Length: 171
Image (cartoon, rainbow, N blue to C red):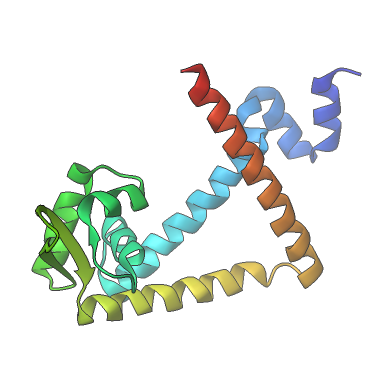
């Protein structure tokens, strides 16, 4: 039996048709991206409604969290963007008094950022919203299903990290 037939037989009919017409859309990675994008879009709408923050802004507030002040470069790395990409959002957060900026006392060339009291309140609203969304999503699974799913996610994450490392080695 060909790999194509094995895959098509294992999939529900609607997905099997998609697998024939657009094979990438039927792949697990594509389905996970659809799920992640739906969750992200819902989160963006919720946090905009609750806190008035854009997606980049809520990502910065969430990453700063209750941590000690961090450099702008480290924050950019934490959110997977470059310093230039986050600078406008940071300026807006500073203007709205959600984030404070200060020179690094150990290195005046570096700027440290942290949440203000109002920023911490926005962070807490984000965390509460995330916990509620997570609870609503996971109530679709019983505890045993969740345990199995999390184990599979850990294995797939490790495999994806290995695949990324292999791609990086190839240049």
